Length: 93
Image 1 (cartoon, helix red, strand yellow):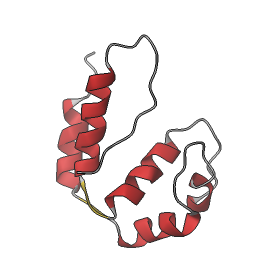
Image 2 (cartoon, helix red, strand yellow; image 1 turned 120 degrees about the vertical axis):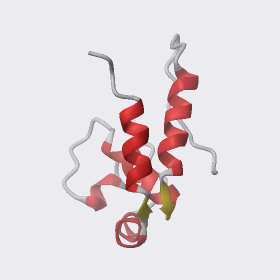
Image 3 (tube, rainbow, N blue to C red; image 1 turned 135 degrees about the vertical axis):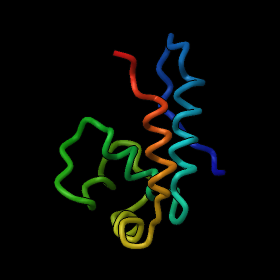
Image 4 (tube, one colour; image 1 turned 180 degrees about the vertical axis):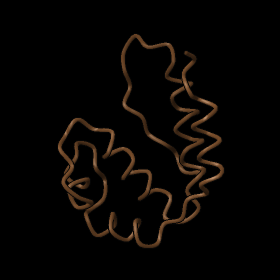
């Protein structure tokens, strides 16, 4: 697995848990994983996203819009695994 980067938030003791979660999500991407993960990061930013190309303009974006379109076209996601990862992290009510 590639190293998954995370924005450090000072004073937060749950960075290890966040890093584990991000790693588990990354593992759900079976083709073009790094580019798909960059799309997820871009969607989580506080900027208006008007389309796939705009994700490459988000702060911290590491790839151009061509890679984003290639990830959407050729990337693969293990949806069952992703569903399990997200369900396991669902907040308690």
